[in-house]
Image (cartoon, rainbow, N blue to C red):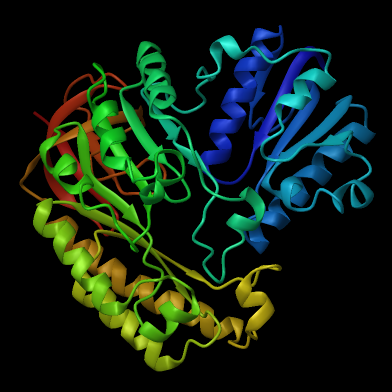
Length: 431
């Protein structure tokens, strides 16, 4: 056990990761050394930043807390703190169920952890973080919360209503991150396309992206988690005309059947969805769309699922994930619909969708063979350098495996010739 060493175990999404990075910066400013996601925590204190989104994530969070509790029982750590979405959601229940935890914090009051350690939060570097991703890219969180209230989603229950960060504050953070060597920004929010409505009375996402784009040193901006209803079309010219705004958009459609969209409270129709996709692709030629789909939501009949399969076949998303419906307590679906679709049916539908997408992905990747693409090199392996194009977000999208014909620097951009393709990866040689 090392004195003044704190082990942070981060679970869940990239928005949680940003919170952990901000906490780390404050801890380090107060004299602590921080390690992230250690396999064998060696610090006096362990902090678990939890996810409470769906059943599997909640189970993982509980299991990690129990593992840390065992280390505490064996006197390998002195204190155990828990923060994040799970504790935000179950703040009343968890202290009784997990008495081994010294204190629980929610998603938004983690600053209290500092004062409980006898330290203080320093607002003079509120936009500074300890980057835990590779140093050339970072996640940029522009808001908290969500106002959409989809039937199946617990996020609004956990995080509350939408709260945009001021543009000036976000741009200040970008400038600081650039000064630390960050070149690539994954702009994240539960719902990017609501940005500014609460703060400015109008959507300001396009303005925000323009101002980030204007910061010297920003090479790539990639947008995650747009919402299809009331999409801000003034964003599209920005994506088309700004060279450092990637032609990439992560927009969760979830379903296409009008019946299912209505039951899911998505506030968009099948016709509007197809029209939106056509307009995005028309105004931003070459754009790669990433989406997520949910199968097995209560009420989904085979005809609805076939409609979804037809949607994927017609639209041919460049990137796609599909997930089985998970009933979450407190949501509209849990309280008003019976979760009556068997798990094996949900799983079979996911498998069918992903098999279809695998074929589509292969066909799209083959079209890139023979083309020259700009890649960011993320890491080195024994036989390849591993990079990504502007169409690939870290950890979730395909990678480019580049032959070692020349020395490449991690975190730098190179032109490569695409020489081969698989379903979810490309092969290339440097130019």
